[in-house]
Image (tube, rainbow, N blue to C red; front, side, top):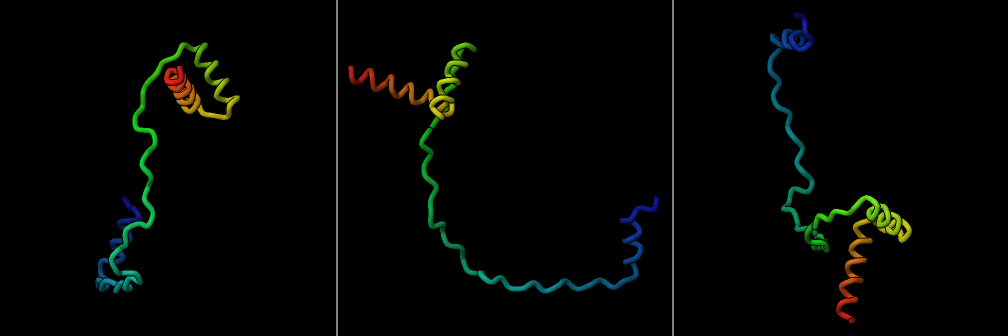
Length: 89
């Protein structure tokens, strides 16, 4: 019934419309320069879903924690070692 919005409209009904305020000119109104630094290309390119048995995952988590690595980083390192081992053999 008597909402604040309606009351405000009623108060301003008889008032003359205010002209729009002039906006201050932008200080740096020139064209933007391209960024000076570029974002490096992502090192890792795709995700590969891998499933582990709960016991094996617990072991992986323990080893990763002991090495101060995330589980993903620990698995990547293990795979890299295994790939290097095949090349060295």
